[in-house]
Amino acid sequence: MPTPRPTYDLVIAANRLPVDKVIADDGEVEWRRSPGGLVTAMESVMRSQPGAWVGWAGDAGEAPEPFDEDGIHLHPVPLSTEEVRDYYEGFSNDTLWPIYHDVIVPATFHREWWSSYQTVNQRFAEAVAEVAAEGATVWVQDYQLQLVPTLLRKLRPDVRIGWFNHIPFPPVELFAQLPWRAQLLDGLLGADFLGFQRQADARNFVRACRQLLGAQTKRDRVTVEGSRRQVRAAAIPISVDFNGLEALAKRPDVMARAREIRASLGDPEVLMLGVDRLDYTKGIRHRLKAYEELLSERRIGPPEVTLVQVATPSRERVDAYRILRGEIEQTVGRINGELGKIGAPAVHYLHHSYPREEMAALFQAADVMLVTPLRDGMNLVAKEYVTCRHDLGGALVLSEFTGAWHELHQAFACNPHDIEGLKQTILRAINTPAKDKQRIMKALRRRVSDHDVQRWAARYLAALAAAPDLPQAEPRNPPTPHEVETPLMPSPSEHSAAGAKGSPS
Image: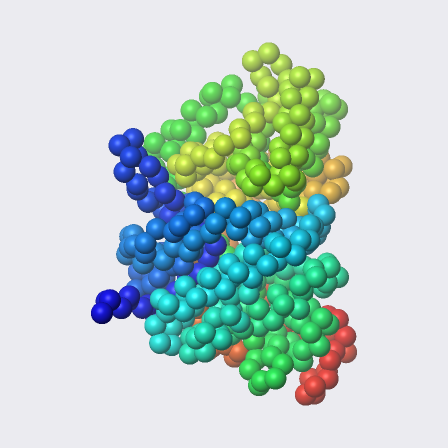
């Protein structure tokens, strides 16, 4: 008889595994840890108990056999070339992503994409059911796997299921455009606890269940039709590994690299920095527009002021992303052609990714960090910049439409749609006295330090264990109004009587 595979008390399910495949010069395959806050958070959780991670390995075709890496059991899920196109590039990133980000570009609806999304979610649910121990805790991640909670509950009613949304959850008026809106909500209601970045996102979900499913809701809870089971939805904003990233930024070689970067750029008086995935939600075009106008008006200019824009390649087979790349590169070329100087370009544009050490050095080199998304679930770049500024230098310009703004109120807040206002905010970030900027940075760093990624993971798991009730143990610091311990408040007309439906909150 074949040896039964081991099972685990904690299972993470995410679209991707936490490792990337690297083929060495000799042809040997190596697996290296992927960058990102989620991987860091789960590492801290899985050190204390054996855990498994279910996800796609990144290549179309047959999946590798399950393997262990850095103490985590990795269970790859296969995706065919057609499924990568339809489930991932199609439904996840050309249907759901636009709807969940204010329809900045139109969403595309194809029934074959939806069919592929259902198929892949079923495959993930079956893989999780295979590796989960009796009574295990399962933590499903993000918008690619919204059907997994209910599919998994049908297979394994014994497990406790949580889901966390790393991106915004849209208002019901936008979510209602989805032809498969009811199926997505039903899929999520298979969970015991649903975590979101902002209270507004959790409220949007509860409201969607009430209006589109006719579900009974009360504050942050939704009663599942045909049962007494309740699902709790609340905000637990994600964060960064403050201690680890700060230690990296304090390394002598990283600090030396920061000085070297400034010198290579001609030691400008003001170095501004943008670091984004190349995505239309990130507001890169708006940022460049504001910067171009400031240059044209001669309020700033090279070589005294320069901008470095790092745009990490993303989803390059999706039409909207290819168009965006062309537009940004054309804009950068025009700015440098018309407003740059010999030996002093106005914009240094870099279209590739960098290792963590280089990013920490860039953050320390930058006098002004421009984080200007049109909509973002959190934006960890803002928190990474703050973490790396152990010298209390720098200034953070932060869009009001990021989840990070709800925690980092002291930053130089902006509405990226308001180009004139964005210009004024940039100038304030440049011209505010250094002493005041140090005071602001100290407050921002205290917030990120107190609410790091390890605390995020611990608070989420505590909320999942207690759901639908509030967790008994309080976090080590008093919660803010944006955190999970604050329940959603009903709208004035929302009824608490059984069976009554309230008006939209």
